Image 1 (tube, rainbow, N blue to C red):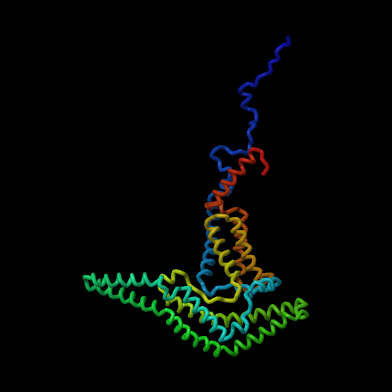
Image 2: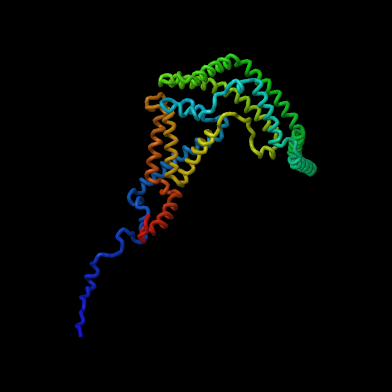
Length: 379
């Protein structure tokens, strides 16, 4: 019978000195292992990062809201003012130059006449659907006048009754009032074209010359000629911008006249605008980009991609200034450069994890995929 072999046992004191088989990188309970940067940076640095993110986010948000509120804002001036080697690329996104069909008195009047018909149906002028609330308002004003006890209550009820009667009367004559507003504004259009005839003719001649230069394949064969065409196009666009700005004020006046004819219930459908032939998609993209970058940065939600998008947008601003951008005459390019570098820093840090909603997204990501790594699964 073979002798039993006894293996030596490790004393308890020696066992305590053996290395642990648990992964040494796993944190102790209560440790901020998911976000070690909280321990490394310190409170002051984190406060500065949050303040920087909020300040830049507020700047973008404020600029975006301002663009939405300003009915005259568009990206045409930004695109047409491009300089340097990327100027032709930016100009390709600019709205087309207005030709003689748009800078034509009869053409503008026809557009206004179409808009008057669109506003009549769009606002629902004299529609029975909007008469009932007005009649109810009138009945309430009459009952308040009948039940008024003091002279003060009676005066307020009389004023309310007068306003209600005016609204009903205006509602019943909205179509006629819109036609009168159209005739009244039509005289202003005629005056505009009479007083700006010389400037319009000069602009159309330069536009024809510019188009002939573009259509000539031999003209734009050299960089010198391309730069010459770009410079001329910038001049022509500047003149077009001045003319269309004055005409735009007349358009806004007519839009405001038809909006004022609508009742409060009709205005709830939103302001109607005269259709423009310009390509407005660039304006929409710029407004929403600036606004959403600001919102996401302030919330600290998807802050890293938001900061990258904001930096790309500011890069386009510097590209419009030409190259090298510091050689330009606009001192704002330095401010843009500073904010661009700050956005890149926020993106590199992942600033949304500090007092932002990205903290919870990173925690959820680490919980799901961190457990897989610990289990030895491929990442």
